[in-house]
Length: 104
Image 1 (tube, rainbow, N blue to C red):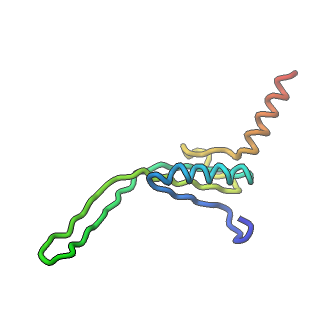
Image 2 (cartoon, rainbow, N blue to C red; image 1 turned 180 degrees about the vertical axis):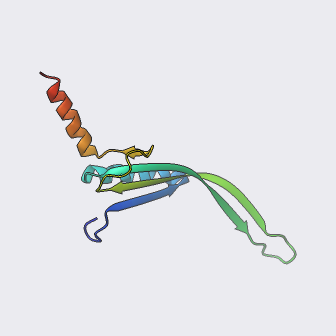
């Protein structure tokens, strides 16, 4: 964030890399107070196989894989987005406040 003056980080992952993106996002969120929006989608992948010999047809294979986009931001994001997660530090402070108030 600080080196390039960026306000947000966007992590994108497909297929088996999704769990790694989630882990990276959680590690980053523990280091800095960040807001998060997570989006899940399905992406179509097309594999094209070109023949090595003359006279053979080109073969296309289509498949769908799960895709995830995680946006981490220093400033608040769209709180109405279904994938919004409030800043972890704010949640902890809010929890402590309610625990303090409930003692009265």
